[in-house]
Structures are given as C-alpha cells and as structure tokens.
Length: 486
Ligand SMILES: Cc1ncc(COP(=O)(O)O)c(C=O)c1O
Image (cartoon, rainbow, N blue to C red; front, side, top):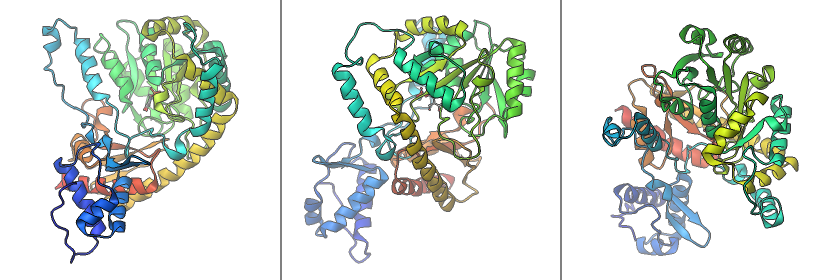
C-alpha cells in the first residue's frame, strides 16, 4: 500500500488528490514500474473514501500512461515509466575505442546504439499500433492459418530477395498506389526501411563518394552516413517550403554519388518535394550519374492536397525506392522493401545475404495474404481516417494549451507526427528528459539538423493514442515546458 500522507477533505476533489498522491509516489520512487497497486476497494477502505473516488483516480492515471490495467491482472505502475531517458552524451570518452584497439567506426556504432533505444508506448511515441490502428483479428487469423500448414510453416533457407508471393503483392501495391514502375523481380524484401537505407549506402557509395542528405533529416539516415569510414561522406542540403534545395546541393557537391530524400513528406517537416524540384533533382542525377534514394516512409498517410506519385515513376533507372510496413501496420513486424533498377538487384541481394541472409519467412507469407486478400487496402482506409482525426485533435489541444512564445506547431502534412517548435532558449534534450519523468515520450528535433543549424523542438507522434490520453499528456507536457522556461 503506497504511503499517502493525508487527504485534505476540506479542499474537495478527493479523486484528484488521490491521483496526485500516486503520481508523487511514482516520482519519488516509492512506487516503481510494474509495482501492483491495491484494488480500488482496498485502497478506498484504507483511505476511508468512496470506492468511486479511487476508481476515478486510477482511470485518470491510466489515461495519462502512469498506470496500466489488464483484465484479471489488476492495476500496476506502467512498465514504460522505467525506461531511462535516451542517453545523449557518450558514456565512453572519444579515443577509448582506439585504446581498446577498435576503429573509430566502433565508437560511432556505440553512440548510435545508445541513441536508438525505443520509446515506451506512451504518448507521444510514434507508430504505436493499439486499438483502432492495429491490424487485429484478421492478422491473427491469417497468421494461424499460414503457420499451421501453409507456406509460413518451418522450411529451409529461402530466397534472399524475399518470398515471391510477397514481392508480387508489393509490386502490385506500389504500382497502383504510388505509380512506381516495377516488376516483382526488382523488389527486395527488407527488414524495414532502416535496412534498405543501409543496403543503399553499402551498394551505392564507394570509399570516397559523397551523398546529399536533407537538413533536417531522419536520424536513421544521417547516422548511417556518420558511421561510414569516409568522414566527409555526408553533405547536408537545406530544405525550404518546396523541399530539398537542389541548387544548393549542386553548389555544395555536384559530383555526389547519391541523394537521400523524402519527397512525399519531407522528414520531419512534412512538405512534399515540388514538381519543379523533382525535375531538377532527376536532371542532376542523370547528368551526374548519381542515384536518388527515395524514402517513401509514410506515403499512405496524406491529409492535404493531391498526393504526388513516387519520384521513382519518373526515373525508374535512377531511383532506389524504399517503402515500409512499419507505419501503416506495425514496426515490430520489421518488413519493408526496396525497389531497384534491374542492374542493381544482384548487388542489393548480395549485400543483404551478408547481413542477415533473408527476412523471416513466416510473416512474409502472412503479409502477402493480408495484401492479396484486400485487407491492407481496407486497413489503410480505416487507419487514415483515425489518424486524420487524431492529428486534428492534437493540433487543437496543443494550440489551446501552449503559449506561442514558448512552443508552437507549424502543421505540415506528416503522416503520424507533428513538430512542436520550442523557443530558441529552451533545450529540447532537457525537455525530453523532464517529460520522460512525467510518463511522456518525445524525441528532440535538434539532432536531426546539421551542426550549427539546429532548432529546438519535439517530435510528437499521434498514432495509437486516444484523444483523452493525448490531452492528458499534452497538459503535462505544457507544464514541463513552462517549468523549463522559468
Ligand atoms: C523518415 C523515416 N525513414 C525510415 C524509417 C524507418 O522505418 P523502418 O521501421 O521501416 O525501419 C522511419 C521510421 O521512423 C522514418 O521516420
């Protein structure tokens, strides 16, 4: 039984007092992640309050992500609150790798390993498929069917390129939904876009080659280029309202071997690459014999305007196209794809064999059936509506809560996140740490920028949480930001 101090019965609103006492017990460490709470009946009896008072307090804390409740298992402190905030500073001094006889690359990998810890599944983590946004029963049924006796049951080594049934389904899907020009034999099934980006860096870049990367950009791509032995491999190219500034790229590195871009929604800002810039980028790529690596990470989720088709459709011989099922289905599935020009298929497959031989077979067949039986299309339609509502509700909540001089949003057309910009004097890493103590999961925006150009901000995911959960978390986040500004 947590110690409560005394409730102030004169002050009224006892359920709010009970909730605050429990929050305080978690903050002080008297209650730890996964600790079981007393039943509402037992706590109400011990505090001499009505049971409904305790039920209300528990419900509020569940909505906030402090507590979790499972049928038959009672209520406990959320496990997620035990996750340490992402470590910022390297725990090893630079030079330690050299002393240990390791190359500098090992240090870069160690830093990346610490940075890429997953966020706990509380607001505002990105891609948390729960309730309405999880594929649910159909996925389970197909899985059982295929695992029991179908092609998903145990077999020997399989094709490193991926199961043909899935490659055919993917080729059909991207042709129809994204105007990608390809056949199934150009599709390589990956364990997500992260692997696709890594494969592209391995296959396309020689030891002295440079690559353009947008500024700001997804850390998963900048980290790959930082880990390459060639220190100047990455050339950061600014973006504006039309997306990548192609002329700036040409000025900085006309002979770059590749450009890593997010044309359908610039990551993290959300604007599409304009038609004029698309033409300029492809003209440069053709003239420079460079490759364009198109990360189409959440193209299914667009809320404004007419969706631009994929860049790949305009230049299938120059573009390496990457897609993922992490956003529209769920990230732990670890399935995505690369579509490459026919001449690159063997090299990509060879690099992938050395990495992990081939993707796990069973889920590939489940996904192929999910797609060919029409479930993916239905799921996309449903999820798009849910996310559109959640996005508007989060925008309204944040606009109502946050004083503009401290934090503001400039809603782009991102699929499952918003960027909350912070006043220049605020440190986004510190706010991430403080928010984590309050059970809120956010990522800092500043590491997505090139050195010297960073802006403080927070990336807020809105997929998977109810409006009530997001509202409660936004209130706490506003309090954290206000406190940090004092
Ligand atoms: C822009 C961008 N590219 C790629 C990825 C990686 O996705 P995957 O889970 O498929 O590796 C993400 C994930 O958040 C992303 O935001």
